[in-house]
Image 1 (tube, rainbow, N blue to C red):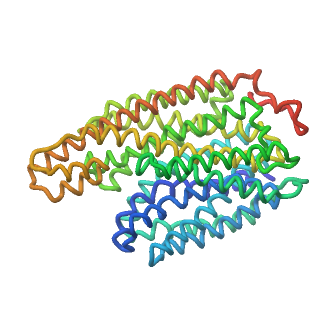
Image 2 (image 1 turned 90 degrees about the vertical axis):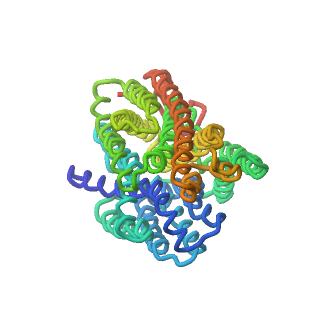
Image 3 (image 1 turned 180 degrees about the vertical axis):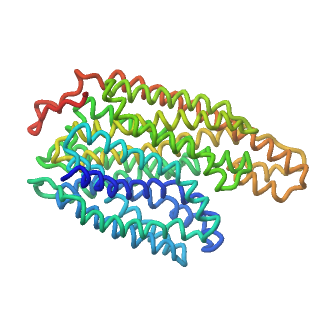
Length: 512
């Protein structure tokens, strides 16, 4: 392929990643409007929001392996068609059940798109230096899209109906199909061996209950159903792992994790997204409910975070040519930790200078780190396992996102509920309801006399900021740990391949 063809192919591969990452954050803005239109029950609303990420996380490993077998470009095209059809279904859904079905199909399509795009980058860019820059652009699309989502949601919902947040996907998917068939080469494993149906079923059946448990904890706290979900999921995943060790052609090559650099890169992805999504869970609520911004204005104030993420991702390859990648990844996460610490200076008045400074530091640090960890994962993995390795990376993203929302969301809301005190003129029952979320407190305040409402909202805002501060401290500590882990575990002497006992063992150098 010529240089122009390669970089044109990168533009095609970045499209679905950008769109999927935007979809992760845009739906929250559409929930009030679609709830008023479709009237879903609380259980149906839960499934509308969560079934997408359930299926996305549960199917990534299976779809990454399938792409290795049937062709990564072919799977990408199939996924794009499914995603486009599902987006149209969701946009014009007339019942909650139809919207749930459309969101499920979106999750299926998303699971085919994400590992295919990252795996194809290795085929399109065989040169190490070009591939590192290409993966940085891919990572910038992914990370930047998550931060841009609120802006897109704010613009669409200010001018169109709630279905527009889904319908915008359809023409992009049509463009992706044309671009993939025109610009992308086909890529697959030469001798994939028989497909193990049981392993595929175990991977899905194991991951789904774990993700369900994480999301249920985030919303309702721990209960018997959560314990049962974790027990079932972890048991099935243990059986899955045992089975992979006995197969000549496993669905997930666990020997990849015998490489400490590969494992460290995957762990960095998971923990980085854990910290970032925990913050993104709170920041939009803080801007809209504490500072009283409109969705569009709140999205604009998140632009520094989005832009810094893109700049950090694109600067990472340049830095990696001058410094060892462990210093770039570790330094990036140290900068992100500093930004998270700066975020604790935000108060109920919302100092805009602090907000911008925190966003710039967090975005630049996370962008630099994520751009290079994906390059590490693809470089260490054998070429014939590129799809499976990419799926592991994406699964780490999804688990990190689910855990960040569940763990940090639960911690922050617990602090908020504990700090929200009784207010004169507000019944104890109303205060108990308000302790469930800041949104509930805002709804209760709307029915109170102006003076009482102002006092109550001030109390709720102080309590919410206290919970957000705890979350920011925890996220900063996690980011600092990831920085130290990168410096220690991504050393050149550890950058060799899988254990020699494995029949497919190879020795490849990651550090440059």
